[in-house]
Image (cartoon, rainbow, N blue to C red):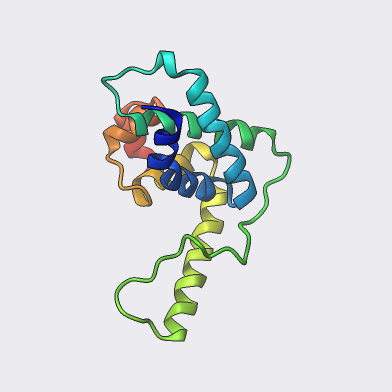
Length: 150
């Protein structure tokens, strides 16, 4: 698989993960680019028996940890970016849309207050529908640790 194919297959899910982890579109874009750069550099070490997505999420999660370690002060999620929100079903009323956006903003803010070690498993489980085993593989953690963090 070449880099273009890798990017086109995993770009959307990686960006969503990185955006939820960082709370900032620009930071998420930078981290996503760095994820693919590191994947390209380390492509010789990839184990074919593992899932490519798990390997990429592992790289991305480690980059998030590094990013948050470098931050002296955490900031709240941006108020104006609702690009990842999804309405369910038919056309909700304006009041329902406002409540959904408000709830989503509160969840994003709460997630950003968690340490990255707790945030990563939650985002992978609830937003990316990964199993405990897949999350454990991505984050290089025992399944029991993943379970306790979720």
